[in-house]
Length: 340
Image (cartoon, rainbow, N blue to C red):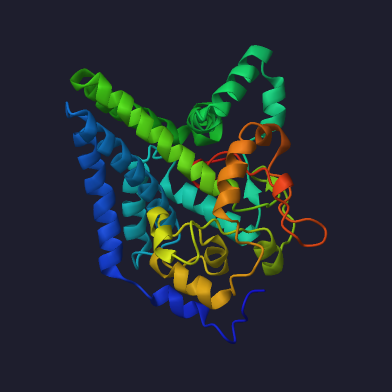
């Protein structure tokens, strides 16, 4: 059970800012992004390999920093968080949707305690030609995240299909041209570097999807649909923490503490660096919501194609026991794609 507010002053965590930690994380993401690309341009294969690892990690951190900026948990003003968040979205290639819209949609996930989806993936898959459906399943089976690319491009192209979003078209076209020119320049300078960049990007998506897959068993609704009323107990019962280790908490810094998801949902404005302490004060460590690392790895592999058609499944059986055999996981990275 979650510790009661009488014994834990959760609001105190909102004000526990560590500017040096935040500044270090932001600097690492920006400088590491530039440094990673620089390493990809080198002739030495070992430097290329280090560049791929560095760039992958920097992209992951940039995505999770964007998530922090959604919650305004780093800077004191909304404008500062929006500016920094837009930079992070540019780095991870999720800049085609406006920062404020992505933030609004993500906060709605917290407030309404549901997930939002642009469309019904299993039904959409069944409507595809057989050869295309089989190709998608094959690519997902060999860990190529084709569905994530599909969802991202669907979101981008929706701007041109939805008359209500006509005011976004010039911005999206401009961004496509600028980013297209930059990647063309990279290809001219070094085709190898462009391929390695794409490899790093796939690595980022895979890591984000792996974490996102097992953090919720919320109901999924299209945007604009009437939503049920869900309470805090429902939120915690359908939220799961995906830690590398609870004992060696420092390992979770590798993913900016994003695995402390129950603590994050208990206090969504708690800064990333304070989540381990908040988690220790809220929970005993024996709760079923801690998904073991071995299960995270095995289930992500085992259900990598079946979850496309079966949905996220059920994480806990009727007796309240963990049910890894039916916890298939979600598909995609929800907080980086606009669904409406």
